[in-house]
Structures are given as structure tokens and as C-alpha cells.
Length: 235
Image 1 (cartoon, rainbow, N blue to C red):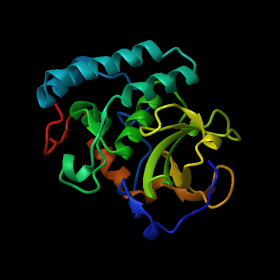
Image 2 (image 1 turned 120 degrees about the vertical axis):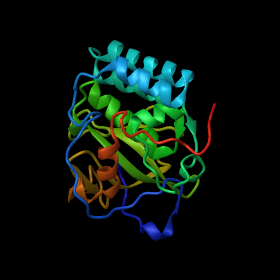
Image 3 (image 1 turned 180 degrees about the horizontal axis):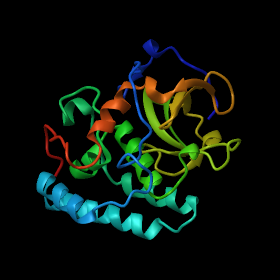
Image 4 (image 1 turned 90 degrees about the vertical axis):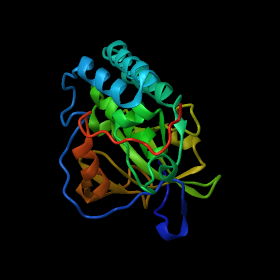
């Protein structure tokens, strides 16, 4: 993406997002990329916590993991983007009673909705589970100029010098960042690094993503052993 760093205080947020200094380890869906998942246990837990329809969604998710595992990255990102963009958009305060809650992928699938960071996080971890390199993925905070609000998307870089493809829950079609002139990048990160987008290109490396407090909290809640319940039911 191409853009400059905007003062955060001047932008009204649709997705609450904070940068603070806290420790973080590199992790995937279960703290390690491509770890074998216990589909039976996960499905039973999701179904018991969130209901029968949630069980159907988690089975559909596992089906994508199975069908897409040997595909090219382009097909993987398309399948994952299409799957999660069927979910509901709901503000954190309404769904979780917390103005800045980052749902785990299992919670997001369980409740069938969330806000923009939940879409991006779920897509990110699912693609890691499918074997897409972490170096190709960045969760990116942008200014959405059409609504003058913060928004979060997932960016995929085929090569280090590539124009990234944008996976978004608002514009559901995957497009190169050069075609998303409505998005002005602020900063981006993956499990290891953080970049500030204050000049053209991939951004300026700003150190470790351990500066992101919410990642640390999310890490401790991955899997299905610490699932939280929403304040409202979406189905």
C-alpha cells in the first residue's frame, strides 16, 4: 500500500486499535504454523459453546483447510476471503461489551461476526494454517477515506517488492492496493514485525510487533479453551 502516517487522534475509528509496549511471541492458530488441529475436539467445543449452527461453520472452515491445503496462494486467499466475508459485521461494544475486543478466530467463527480486526485476524491465522508464509501477510491499519474512519484489512505480498493484494470485509473483491485509493495505510504488522507507512512502498520498519498489546492478549486466548461469550446472539 502507498500512503503516509496520519495523526491517530484526528481520525474517528470504526475499529479501535492501540499500540502499547508488551511482550509477544510469534504464533499461529495454535502458536505454531501448520500444527495438526484436533478437529473433533474443536468442533465439539465450538458447538457446545455457541450452538449447532456454529458447529456447521467450524466444519465448513475445516473443509476449506482440507480443500485448499495444496492450492496456490492465489486460490487460498480467495477461498479464505470469500468464506469469512459471509460473516456479520458488528461493533465490539455491541457484541462483546468491550469497545476494543480482539476475538480469536474460534470466537469469530463461533459467534458468526465481529468488526474489521476480527475479519483480518481470522483470515491471517487461517492462511498461516494453510501454509502461506508469514512474510507475505500483514494486518494493516488504514484510513478509509469514504467514511473518514479507521479500518483494518489483510494485505498479501506475493514477493517483497509486490504491490499487495487487499483482503477486505467492506469491499469484498480482492484488489491490488493501487486500486484501493479509498484506503490510506497508517501502519501494518505480522507476528514478528511492525511497519509505519509514512512513505511509499512496504513502509518503514518500526521494530517488533511485540509493541502491540492486543496481540499478547490474543495469544493467550487462542484455541478453544478460553472462549468468551458475546453479549448478544447474532442467530
